[in-house]
Image (cartoon, rainbow, N blue to C red):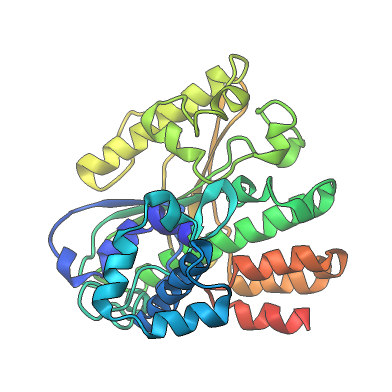
Length: 354
C-alpha cells in the first residue's frame, strides 16, 4: 500500500546494507514493514502501461493494449513513457483516498534491500542496530476511511472498522517490529509510542470539534505537527481540528513530545532528569512489562502514561472472527481485504469472505 511509503524509510534504512553506519538513531512514525518482489514491480508497471495505452486511445481495450505492448521494444517503451505528462502518468495508476496511489514498492533486489526483506529484523541480520523510536496513532485509518462510501451513514460499523484496521496497523508496524528488534541482544533500546490525541477514548468525547472528532480522530499523520510544534495538518483540515479551545492541552502535549524526541536525539534516551515528564520505558518482550507510552491530552492538561498492552495480529483476528465480521456488508469486508492485501492476514480474510 503506497500510502505508507513515506513513513517506512527508517525501517528500510535499518535493513539496507547500503545504509550501514550512516546514522546513529532513528524515529519511525506510522510505518508498516511491507516489501515487494521484482516480479510484482514488473507486473505493476505493465498494468500501468496498459492503462496508459487505453487512456490515450492507442488501444481499445485490455487485450489490444497487451498485444501492442508485447510488440514494443524497450527503447519504444521508454520513449512512450517519457512522452507522457505527469498528469497522464498519474492516470495510469489506481488511486485511494486523498489521491494516494496504489502500487507495489520497496523491492527486494538483493542489493539495496536484502532478498529476505524485513525478515532480517527477526533473524537479527539487519546491518544497522541503533536506538529507535517507533510509533503509530490510535485511529490511523480514519484518514482514509472517512471518504469510504461503503461506510457512510453507519457510525458503529465505521468505528469498528477504524479500530480494527488501526489496531492491525499497530500490531504489524509497531508492536511486531519492536518485539522482533528486541529479540536481538545487540539491538539498543526501542522506545514505542501510541498517539491518542483526538480519539474519543474512555470519555466518548474528542477534543476535536464534531463531526471531525469522530470522523478523523487520532488519524494517520496527526502526530506530525506535534513533533514540530506546528498547527498545520493537510492545510484544509487544520482549522477544523486545531481550535483555540483545545490549544492549551495540545500545545502542552506538543512540548512534551518535542522534549522527549530532543532528549532522544542527543543521548539515545528520551528521558531527561528533572524534566517533570513521565518516564518513557523502552519496549520489553516480557509479559506485563512496559511496552509503549500513550501520548494524550484533554483540552487543558497532559495525559501521558505507560502501557503494558501488546497488540498482535492473532488477537485482532480472533476479535474479528467472534464479534465483528457478521455485522459488516460485503463492500466493507472487501475494504478490510484491501487493507491487509500485503500482509499475512490476506489468506485468512479471503477465507472468511468465501
